[in-house]
Length: 339
Image (cartoon, rainbow, N blue to C red):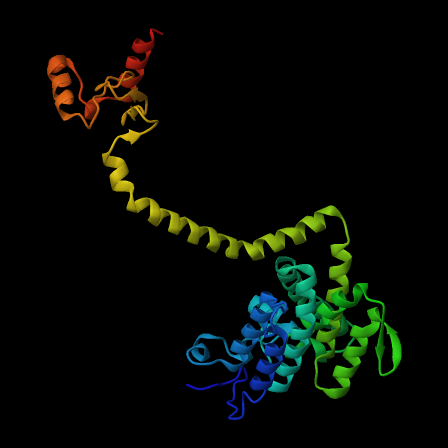
């Protein structure tokens, strides 16, 4: 089917930035001993698959017009699909490439310092916060008479990336930009101005919502203990599928090993310390010189002649191994020890 795009019209030149993006990822992940943040790579791969829609994904994924962020439609119809999925869609390849290169740089640094689980929970939080702030800002501007942001359609990962920049620069000092020392906390705002200057069509309200999301995340993360527990819970939920898959694989391997010897274990009496044999009924360890269990009177299964003799001596009133009930075993134990 070839490569299409998340836009509704086909672009025959789509994919021109893929080799360059792959080269940048190779520089980051390729060298021996280099850190290879998995969540960052997974996010870039997910955005690339959604944008280029290779093969059968073109028919499976929703079209861009069905998921673009629009405050009016989200509030009026409660369209959560637009609220969450619009962050993973892009309207142009230039926008996609810019966001992914920023994600590769910022996301790799954050994931390396925070850990994959906490980084994944932060991404989930920033998506919800940035989209929420964009919704609130659009609704607020509507009440002030500005109708454009409220009915505007937008898409892209730039709001989340700007929120990541705020978190990344929170503990940094001054940053030198164009020969001028700028406090790190203002770098995200400077980047916002550069984005708007290079691309006037960029969604200003959405990018501002992303910066506010990063600031809100820092405030909440440094807040009270319940909020810390909430973010830790998000991290546990995000990493739970990977841990569950690992336990499932280990359990399946152990089950296969156990099943291969299960038939032999079930048919033979339990061997214990040298000179004893284990009863298959009550698991009592008996001397190898006895043919009948001293606890429950069950014959040793390896001694077929002794078992037949034991049943003959007991007559019709003696119970066979298969007929012994739990209560009968308990009674014989009490009788054996005189309790």
